[in-house]
Length: 154
Image (tube, rainbow, N blue to C red):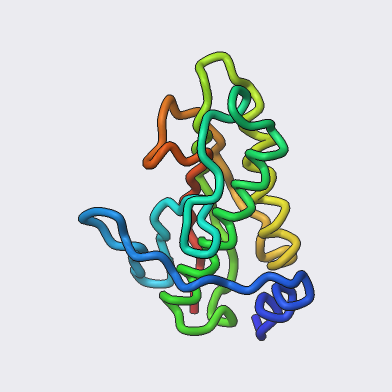
């Protein structure tokens, strides 16, 4: 893939942030063979957590989808840090999205669509992926959403 991802990000007016450092004893990403595993990313913007609280109680589904989009931007920032160049990203294989919500919340898929739709918009068909979208009773720092990813890389 040429610099299509970078070009699409530019056309959308999205500037990737500096990849966040881990908040504990883990790696932000691990490369093995042609796979890149990116640790869970939070909805960070301008170096701060942008969306906190429970989706469906403190935040709307739309707010949650916006948080998921921010997580996806941060996933791409980690992929760029890992590869040095997003043109080395062949495809997105899978994302797992965690939604901070109460036990009766049922709209996890609509929330995680914020990430899925953005990644397909930026990566085209290479952004189509397998996915899980689940509720979590709590997330680190009270984040609204956390998403991890697996990419195929050159």
